[in-house]
Length: 294
Length: 336
Image (cartoon, rainbow over all chains, first blue to last red; front, top):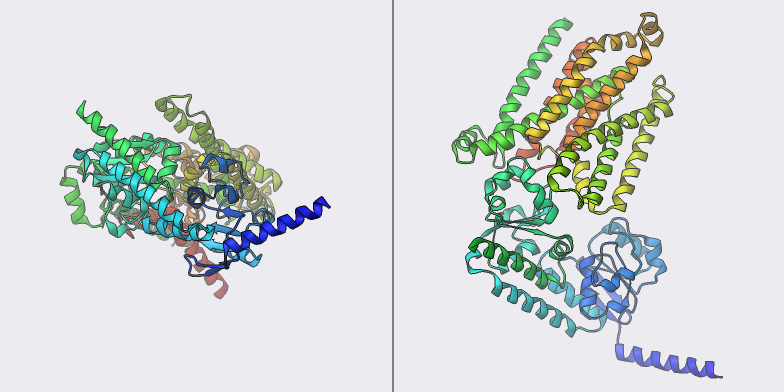
């Protein structure tokens, strides 16, 4: 008797939930595909750290049921099933989790496979700041909380402005070389990192033509003689050992930022923590400035 | 006749190498031109750019190619198999496994040692690990193939060992994901960071491996007549084989530890030499080293200048150049 009563209550609550949620939601993702979800999804899989962070920043962390192996912020996602990376996603486990929607960036193989298996897949790019803003808007609509996107974006803006205010005047306009891989690849002006540097009033040592993340001839960097060098801490420590790089004035004068790995991760993720990332760069600039005045 | 062709090949290689060495000094991040070189040389950073970056890189690329060419020619002579090459014998994948293990270990223990000592240890350790890995790789292949007599068995065993060792190094990197970024750069092969230190290691490697392989060239000639004939000539085959395998592993190990995995040079260089000037092994070994150096230097100059100041990974270019040559060769054989 009481069980039947329980079921009736549950059905009734369910009906309310559906009516609150409203009509099916059609979203256009970044490959131009229209993805329709019947109600705001309750079970979400994210296969990219920046998308995981976006879902959490939009207040829906509890709806995540699995992430890729690199997602590690906020700490609560560490407890979720780790489903591989974009290139080696564990399709079977993802399907077994019965997600209402899977969030990822363009990776044709995984997308096709998951869709063939009947899952809803939302492809979101995050190459620059505009992409991040758009992704946040789309995810917020998906979650059924469209006004949250504006809140998260204005947080990013506020944090960025606070960072801009802290940049020492003497360092404005300095030419920065930001290395994203020791091969070496660097962040060009059109990348989201480059855009953050520009917001902070810094110049990029690389010209725009080279695109977002060019692989450079190491000699080129020595010729550029950037005013400030930024890289992961270990890569920065190894730089003077590269042939000719000990001649980089920025390294000799310690006008450089070597970011510890968790801070570096924050910098290379185009997501809701971009404002915080601007703050991390500002911290380093302040350090450089105080060292210079000693 | 053959003598003339040998002369021509030697002169040709010397000429091309000289041109490429000049090209290597002239090819920089602005593309390449000789007037630019003159300007660069007289600019404030001239000595630095040309002397500390371009010169060692150019010489280093040649030396890596030479070691790979020598290793390839040694392998092809030793196993009497034109397809033998540091890659197909599992020595390159063994060397890279050694390097990956050292990288992962240094990441795990990196905090306990100071950077300077870690660097010296890492440099020696890298070469040693690559050498031991290469040696183990070849030994494993030879054991699996029960000697080098049967071509098909040898190649199959080499492929299997190569795949298994590559899988093990993948396993290591997936256990220590921080090593992954370093490893990817390593797998693509790179001449970009060859400095004078690397050049010294490479030159030493060539000095150590070239004389013994030259001395053993006569044995390789005897081997071409077959194992029985070689025996009847009074050669101590097991000892000679071991010595040649060590030479092969040493040459591969040193090249891999300095420049990562660079495909096809070891396979194609001896082919080119034999094609232009069939000769005894003494000549083939030396000429293959020279041809390997020339090939890799050419790839390096192209890698730098094609889309300067950006770079094409040099391993991609050697695969395209060397692989293209092999495809052409196969096609011609089928036609003729």
